[in-house]
Image (cartoon, rainbow, N blue to C red; front, side, top):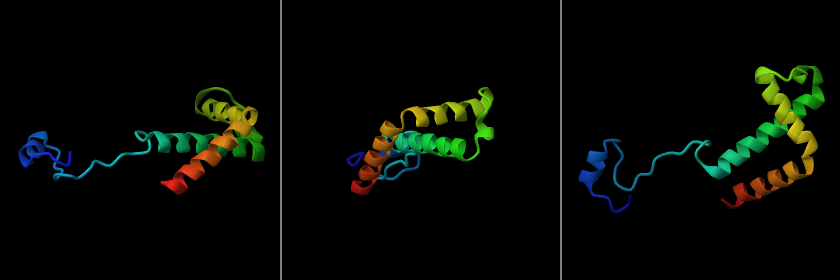
Length: 93
């Protein structure tokens, strides 16, 4: 990308200049996706501990939240380890 000619950039048609990188969202970056998943699990577990009636149903959208909370409850040492590793990774980034 850094040694790309201007013609190739224009032929690509995305409007980026030479050397300019496209932005990545959290869904396309592996480390960010892992952080989002772990935070989702931690949040669902916290909600289930604070207000268990919100996540009683196991169907639909609340079912996804219930499953994430169940993962957080059962695998809490591993989730904590991944949270710690993601935090160190963000600090070293």
